[in-house]
Image (tube, rainbow over all chains, first blue to last red; front, side, top):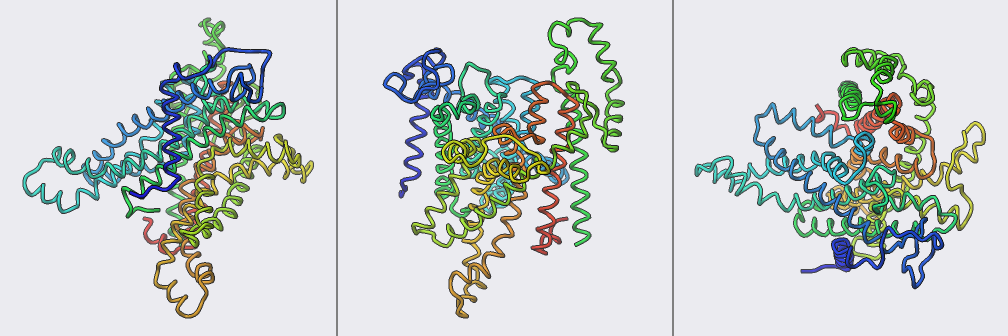
Amino acid sequence: MHVTAGPWAAAVYLTVVVILAVFADILSPRDPLAIDPNNILASPSAENLLGTDELGRDLLARIIHGGRVSLEVAVSAIVLASAIGIPLGIGIAFSGRRVETFAMRVIDVFVSLPEIFVAIVILGFAGGGLTTLIGTIGILFFPQFARVAYGMARSIRAREHVLCAVSLGAGTAWIIRKEILPNMMSVIAVQASFTLSFAMLMEAGLSFLGLGVPPPTPSWGQMIGGLKNYIFINAWPVVVPSVVLFAAVLSVNVLGDWLQDRLNPELRR
Amino acid sequence: MLGYLGRRFAAAAITLALACAAVFASIHLLPGDPVAMLLGEQAGADPEVVQKMRGQLGLDRPLIEQFISWIGGLATGDLGRSLRTGEPVFADVMVRLPRSLELIGGGLSIAMLLGIPLGVVAARGRGRVAGTAASVAAIAGFSAPVFVSGIILVIVFSLWLDILPSSGFVEFAEDPTMHLACLALPATAIGINFMGVVARMTRASLSDTMTKEYVRLARAKGLSRDAAILKHALPNALVPVIAVIGIRAGNLLGGTVIVEALFDWPGLSSMLVSAVFARDYPVIQGALVAIFAVFVLIGLAIDTCQGIVDPRTRESAA
């Protein structure tokens, strides 16, 4: 199996981020909420390895804890989106022709909607918070899974091995469980990896605007949103979460590309 | 062509009508009473005050009546008045709309000017250093959150080089040079992000087109590799690229939310965000309708371009 440097670096980086996020309480060098008024917006030092933010809080600690929020929201939202989208997509593929056309039109409209505006309105009214954020992003992304699942289910259903199973008397439920689902998993995995990077960007963007998890709990996007106002005092602190977030999204996309090439070489873009 | 355009227009009108209904419904059906939120906890606890406020805002009428009067207003360019400032929402939308369009137009131009050549280099030099570098640049641009590329632009061009303003807005009529200087960084931030999408799509589409027989024929008749790519492969390869730009128009529009907040650009998105924070729901409704209208119009423009460039789409799109 040939893997180039890019996917390796991405996998290593994401592993480190996930480990730090999961064990944040043990691995974080300091309290992410501890304020130090005498040491605000500092560049790296022996005391604060990545410097401090506008309230003198340790940036390394906040990055580690912030990663937890960012990853938790993105991953949960994807799980939610696929849990709604995949059954829906398969269901539509097995419904009658009329339902099919209508449902897919509706889903296409949803897919093309500029999601962030819908998210802003929902979160503006419902208020930010971990659950609302996950729910909103999950609901915004499920149509994409529904569309992919629908397309795959339709194409797999027409394959010979499935026709063969039908002619041997297999029922719809059996076909879906034994033939359709296992065969669509590789495409779904690729879809999930790309949607994951969108969900991370969405969470970061909403938190950046102040509509994400309420402070003082840190998230990467929220840190960037707060620190951007101090660029002209010290540009360093805002660069830290920006680079960390960028590298994380880039890694997910690089791995998604790699997965695409490995699993579905015929769909190479 | 006319029939095709007619169908596209009808579809766009239906989408927009549905979007308007959805906007109205979302404001009125979402949990959270706008009046209670508007008045705050203390005044909101007084039923008499709440009742009076409802009457003033017309919220005590049946929902369907409110909807009809809102739609009627929409048709005549009346979107109500802001609860905060008392200014008519429609006038504010019309002032801000061109500013957001300017950002989108600037961003899209930058994305195409950088993204298409980058995609060509990536496809042409597959397996070589130049090609790999171009692919890396494409995926990096595509992965960078708009606010990260925006912040990097501010640090480089405002803090270090000190040649462009880091934020703000000046009317074009007042000072055209300053206006463009203010536009430069936010438009580039949107453009860089979208450039990645355009470059990746161009690369994929061109790699595919380069294997086609007519390109080989062009080579066989003596054209150089580059001439064959630029004259024969690229024009055909760009058709799906235009389609993807259309599908991703929402991203372009979504990018303005972050960029307008980051650069204090007084467009439609910043209008929406500040109205959401202030619970100023006539402004929220107005801004959303305008944003969806822009979105539908971008889609329509892309469909039209595609219909002109590629006659086959006219027949297949029923």
